[in-house]
Image 1 (tube, rainbow, N blue to C red):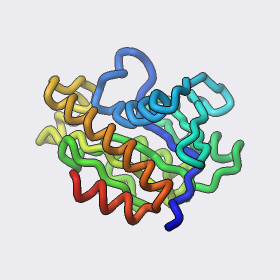
Image 2 (cartoon, one colour):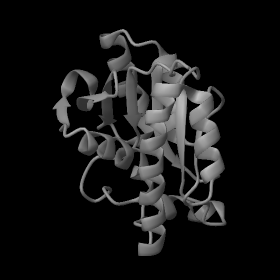
Image 3 (tube, one colour):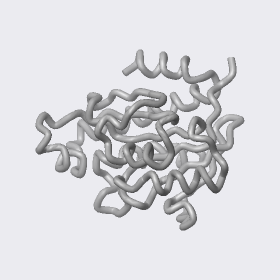
Image 4 (tube, rainbow, N blue to C red):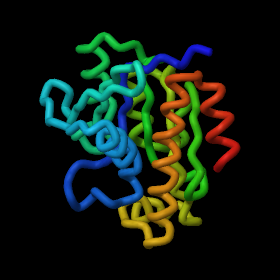
Length: 193
């Protein structure tokens, strides 16, 4: 069975050490784990307004991107990469934190709205909605007024471990996605979480 072709995987987050371990940087954690697994390193590329590295995932060469424009301006970086490398939006996977999923739950999705996520909203504004998403659950804090503090704070140790475990599962699911297709990857990942 053929896999689902991807040419780029983008992790959304905020640059800088003060944000590195916050829930909002779950997308960065995912692409960092892919780079680590492939023994590759990110390098700042000003033309893409982000950090980039190339990895071989099976028989697929993929560009990984961490926008350095801050979350709410992520679309500029994604669009720059897509335009320069001539990557159609449907061959891009965007990984990001998702308030509407419990911690430890990860879901693939294609197309759709932004779900209130400012980073995805900006990506859609620059690129369109026809791209793959990998939503990494960080759970809602319970009240709208607590959201900003929740996403920009480091999770307690047990929750952070669950987040890291979900990122590891997501990395494995990306391999299935590329080798066997989105349907198989979704059924495996969505059953396990």
